[in-house]
Length: 121
Length: 107
Image 1 (tube, rainbow over the protein chains, first blue to last red):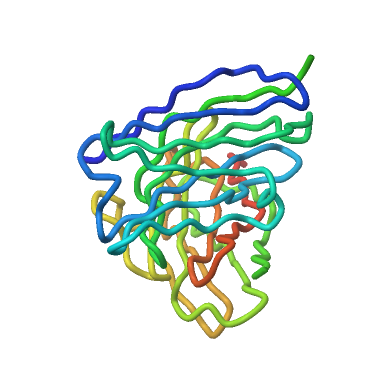
Image 2 (tube, rainbow over the protein chains, first blue to last red):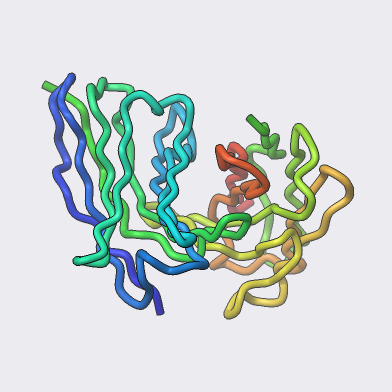
């Protein structure tokens, strides 16, 4: 059974960087069938996919255009985890952030517990 | 981006009722359509993948169907634990996109 455990701060100041980590158990970040995603949810924007990383003989990343200039998703094979960095945050980035396993084309079958990140000074 | 239009946004129903939720994709997505259930304070839970494939452990009262770019989630006999919000999501292409949700409330 796959479990995803998220960690990171719940409060970030405007213009700073939001950083979250997702530790994986029961699967590998280097899996050739999975993809590791970040999704956020807010009342104003609903469920919003931010991006993903996955390994298919080499590493790939896909990002949403809405955050492409500010986002980095990195795998860490030594710790079997992956991370999200979102730069230059504004109050509009306030949301519950989830890390999610979802194979390309498949459903999101494992979710982290979610972290409410508030952007405020 | 592929837009997912979900309806209704909310509904009131009673235990035992048959409930139908619809999701329309703005373009062809084959059968790459997933349904989720979300309860307050919890992460979404995958119910159905590939439009009609029931996930292991999900009660058989849940079913999914498709007709072109129209997709339907049906709960054949609503149970007390089914009161929640339901979302559709397309997995055909990035960005992955979600419907706006349907909140199922007690009548």
